[in-house]
Structure formats: C-alpha cells, structure tokens
Length: 265
Image 1: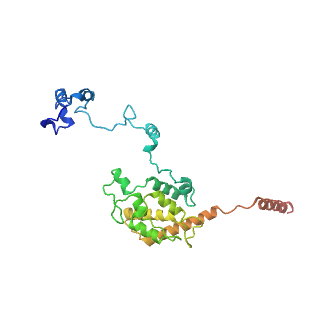
Image 2: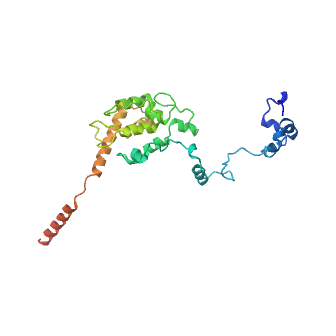
Image 3: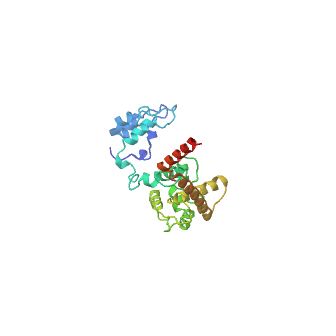
C-alpha cells in the first residue's frame, strides 16, 4: 500500500463516506485502502434518518433477554469468570449458616456480592455523579465503607473482640468476613454463641444511611452501642427459639394424670 499520503494522515472513517448519500466513497477507498475495499464495502453504513442504538450480539434480533443473557454467561470460559468467587469461601458456613438474624444473612450476601447501593455502584448506574464517602470524602466502595474508611477502622478497633481486628490492611470483602466470623466477642454483649461482627457491619451501614437521608450523624461509640443493643436482642430471640421442648415421657404422664383426674371427679 505504501506510505500514507499527506492529505490522508488525519482522516477518519467518516471521511470515507459520501457527505450526501452516506454511502462509501469507493474512489477514495480504492486510493487509500485498496486491500480492504471488499471488506469495507460489505459494511452497510447507517443513514441520516436512523438513530444509534444498543444491540445484543448473541441474539439475531439484537434484543436482550434474560434467557439469552443466562446462556451467554453459562457458555463463558472459566478463565473469564472471577476465580475467587468460590475459592476458599464457603457460603453456607460464612453467611447462610451463621448464628444471627436472617435479615443479616441477606445483608451479608449483598455485601459480598457488591449489591449494596454504595457510591461506586450508584455512579456506574449514573444515579449520582459524586460517589464519595460521607465520613472521609474518598471514593465510596463496599470495601472502603466497611473496612478501609477511617471511621470503620476506628469502629473495629474499639469493637469488643478478644483479639483486636485491624481492617485497614484488607484487600477484599470475603477475607474480612472470614476473619470476623471466628472473632470471639467479649462479655457482656449478650449475644450467646454468635458474633457481634454482622451487627457492627449493619450499624456501619445504618450510620451511613442516617447521615445521607436523615442528616443525623452517629459517632463511633454510638455505632458500636447500636450494634450491641441489636445483637443482644437477637441473642435473646435465638435462645427462646432453641429452648428444649418437653420430653415425650413428660407429656404422656401429664395426659394420663389429666385423664385420671377427670375419671374420678
């Protein structure tokens, strides 16, 4: 093809189109890109009357559906998927089998999946333009708000655990969840065999929401107190649910005693 002519060094694709008809300028293409002429002419350019639109390539119609999206995700190569999704993270033991309230299990699932409406996610969806943390002004990601923010780090530093939890060195959410699930809470939290950590994460999230929606700021100690109160109440409910039922022999004796009393009165 030779060197690019001086007049063509700054040309764009639009310069290969005829200004009136929006068709290809075959003479110019033949001069500049003769080797690619056939491939270029196979592309049908849009007209002035058409608008740009998004097209879903796996579907011939260009329209997206949940069904085609599911099959496209299923057919992706394993190397394209996130390798760490299930790597050393047991969802049953770390989230769903936890000794805490069901709403906290759903909350933790959202935390790990990155499904909470933090600033980063809202910015991706163009819901907000400034995705900054309300406490420190840095970019608000899930990892930042729960572990890396100075506010969160201070909350974890003062948390009543047997071993102090340092959150500032974490690089992912799952690592933090795994460490916190084995953290031993010191008395008198009153949460029984459970851990206070999920309630602290919940309180950090509630502190953030109260500041945004109610313009009410909770300090570090208030955030911890709120977690302790809610964790204590949850511990009482769990204990009441797990109280052992009367033994079958005791029930049988009581029934026989009632029958005996009615028979002789």
